[in-house]
Length: 239
Image (cartoon, rainbow, N blue to C red; front, side, top):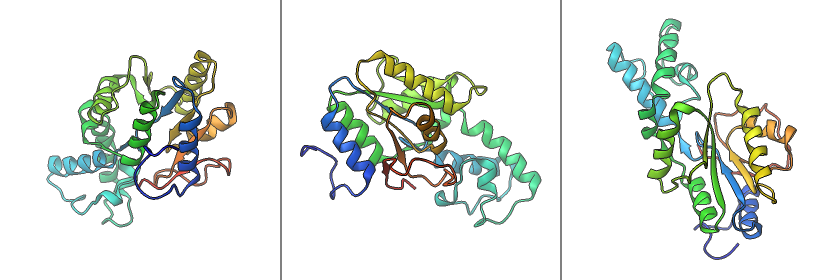
């Protein structure tokens, strides 16, 4: 890769080496694709804020000791974090319902923080004149807020480059594979990569469209029991 690559030490992982090679090999206009939640954006601050809001509304302190590192993939899992005083099941259920609402409010997306290492790969892709697209399991009513979130971190998508899932009835993994296949048909060259922390999404991609390279961002939310090809390019742990 040329000298304008990401700052810091030499690439240490297969994922970093793969992306650097792809940036040199891909023709201008080639499509590369990024997931959003826990790939470009760390969503844990959203859950932390929902816990603070829950305590404020209920005049309680169930989550007073909750720290960012203790946040899990949703409200119920976070409430059951073994490092916290265990709330009773009715409280867990109530917080789970609160999280379902608070976490998916459009205004809550502003609480996310960018994952700098992944943002840098998206920036480099743009600098190499690649067609950077965003494919997310967020549903359609979050389209405008997602567009604004990308704009805030300098990755404003072009028209049609941000695609949200139609609604919650649609299974995320197969739907993403269908969209990637549609995008692949648009061009005479292959998609350069699809980057996500979602092991389920990558497992679906590897089963149905193995010609599309998947890049895994290591993330604490995804179960290692979900099997991926052993040579899957993997980026260092995000959190």
